[in-house]
Image (cartoon, rainbow, N blue to C red):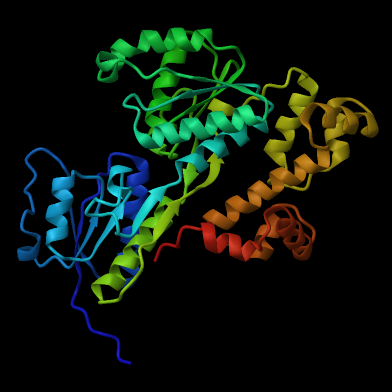
Length: 400
């Protein structure tokens, strides 16, 4: 059957770009448009004095990528009867009565983000956890905090939740800051803290500096979104959770393209899932009081993903025989030295699968594995799927 012809699509992109996650989704849309276009894109910028595009049909709009909006705005968009997909609909927009309830969407898995953050800190032996949410208590912030707390407490840790600020503080950081400083000072140390997003983590770091709290030694701080404009501009530089939002933007655009070509699809939800923790100075510490074991762990984290280190090297750092070092390390960390080395190597493998187009053979060599077959067997045993399947599920698509 001959493929139906379609003139150049004209797509209205109604996504705010104030947060890094939204920008990543938009970049994924652009990737698809470059590879399979051309598309004519109109993006609502939201700046002062912006010329509006109020009559979408008159402009020749053929598809819409919407985002969070009022019910009235959604009803107006639905009235156009144009193909629509939605980026990050709120819980209200997912309700059965909402005009966008049956639309395909892309949605951040905020609970998975909270769980990844908890696991990151649990691996570093923290027993005290803390969470600082968005000042407006937005749903995705609540979900991240709840999942972080649940995962921490399920492993025997305790988690303090920063109270939602009152209205005056909610709109003025200068007013809120003294209360956050007092709360941070009162936390048991050392403590592992997750902030709901990078912008909020920046405020935590600012409050720590004002209160003369050492980061990361007293408080290790982790953000979400990996926004380089924030993470590289804080003191110390901010560690942050990276997600595959770019890939879901691509898939959202692909779905819309099919709708504009007259295809019929069932509603699909493309989840934005965390891919890795980008480690910077704000979390370069652990909560292990035994300094020799702590130093050995830091050596493994620093070196194991880049070269082939072995157990005797680590035992030398601990300053004990191999047998005693193995027993002592397992008692403190909960994993053997070799298990920790493999854990770090596999995290590095996952990062390279997600972020690069390197072949499996090249990844095997870079991560210090002797044979590709050995890595393939170990990877499947730990993750329950092949490296190719993992890459297909996680990787952002390559630039054209």
